[in-house]
Structures are given as C-alpha cells and as structure tokens.
Image (cartoon, rainbow, N blue to C red; front, side, top):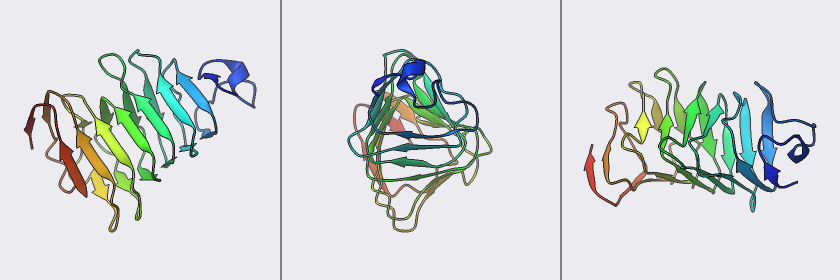
Length: 171
C-alpha cells in the first residue's frame, strides 16, 4: 500500500517499523518522519521512498538493497544516518543531502553494486572514520557530489566513480 511512512495503514504489520525491524518496500512511500533504527532496508525495482520536503532521516544499522529510488534530501538535513556497519547493494538511486557515518561505522559498497548515490550537502559523507567508506572490489557505484560548496571527510580514501558538479569541492 502506498502512503506515508508514519501511517499504520501503509504497513502490513499495522504500524510503522519498530527499532530493529528489517523493511522491504514494494510501493511508493512518503517519508514524513525520521525512521526508527532499521536492521535492514530493501527497496525493490519500481518502488520508492521520497521525503515530503522536510529534514527527515533514514536510520540504518544494517544492509541496504536498493533497486528503486530513495530520496531524503528535503530541508536542510535530509539524510541517511548509520547506526551500525552497513553494506549497500543494488542498482537503484539514492538522493540525500548527506550520509552520517556515525564516527565508528563502515559503509561498504557491495561487489557488483551499480548504485547511483547523489549527495548535495556541504559535508556529503560526514563523521567518517579512517576506513569508513569502502567501495567493493568490483563495485561500479557512482558517488555524485552536486552541492554548491562541498568537502569530503579525510576518511574517504577511495571512491569507485566520482562525479562532481554544481560548485567548488574540497577533497
């Protein structure tokens, strides 16, 4: 059922996902609240999560498999917030202001991932530890930095495909 993330009627379980739940999205969802800490998130082909224009976050403590579209770029701080190590896979699109790495977590792009990750915030990958961003060995995912003035955290050491547009960058 398409609808708002916060609406009980949107979910088969009768309420929005709780802390520790793994979520599979098979339709269009509007993100109208910050999610609880998700153990995993799968967005199937043709499905989407799109924020309602406000500063909401998807809090993720496990894997992301995205073959659809995820947009959390509304307001000043629409984002992904890692609450655990996370491996991202799939061929979908992620649009966000930034990804908060939580200082001690790793984001790994799975081998074979072809995701397009579009980040528009000033610090698109924030709170990155020394090995926090790890592209998989044969990942062809693209990291697109499209903000007006952006800086990459020193913990970002390797990016499989980096696309820059929209203004000055400090790398």
